[in-house]
Length: 247
Image (tube, rainbow, N blue to C red; front, side, top):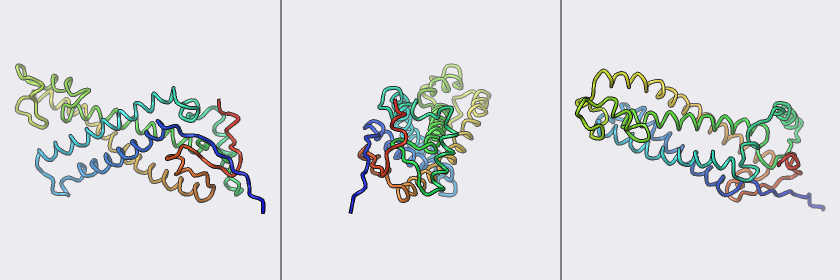
């Protein structure tokens, strides 16, 4: 019996794999702590100290998330061909590629890709838009809620009463702040909080869809998608359609 030839491709470089798992871990932790903060009353968490403690923990993990995301964005200009933005961001002919890929799935012979398939590329773009949105809005809320960097000193200086050291302000303590300016800051930060929360809901949905899609592709098409994020290598049953088009 003749064994069918398999095609192995070295796809995900080490920095990309590290980003993926650090991002996954930090996002899951942030979502968990965020849900605890959102439902703190239902969980019996009422003290200001506990509220501040949760915020500090959330923001501290958020710094890891933001630093990791920043490095990944930069790596998109220096990494291997699969890590670069010119490969990840869909081109002008992407819709046609997606149509052909979907057709191949319906025919029971899905096209093989060494990197992301056309649908995966779209998912990557949506994921990064959500992650960047979460990072920006999270940093703004970190500064305006508990006076943490990079915007905390600006927020504290704005609301502090004359003669009060902005660095001495305690989150949620209004005794040393200008009430009018504090209320103005609350109005300013509110939409960023709403965007942060609703984007997190979208991110949760995307994570569920992503995991389900990866498992389905792994079962139906093979390729070792899951193991590839550990080893960096994908093994396909057919020659990858995107190899010749890669730079």
